[in-house]
Image (tube, rainbow, N blue to C red; front, side, top):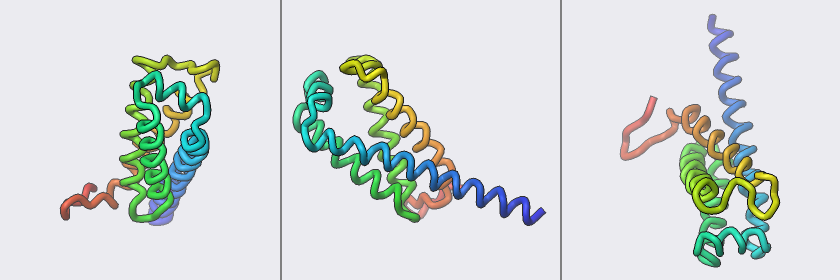
Length: 138
């Protein structure tokens, strides 16, 4: 019985790390486009009325979330920041931008969905690490 529990915990831990890495890599690869003012990023944030401040600010937030996701003790915070950021992005896609932006075939929307769902799962997996004002989730 102890061996099965250990294997289950190891699987959950490795799954958490895999999701953390996937989410961080997705967000990190989009930073190049945000910070170099690629036409797609400028179009998105101009459409939202947030160019250039929103583009640069969201890039900084995603960079912070990515770094936190790649740490052991702060991954929960990175997941929370990523989930919040992606929730906003998905709402923008569904209400203003549309799922397909500049003929991308919905790729940005899909990547946002992947990061959002992964972040929620990471929060569930890492909930025991969350420590807010001395209160721990279990």
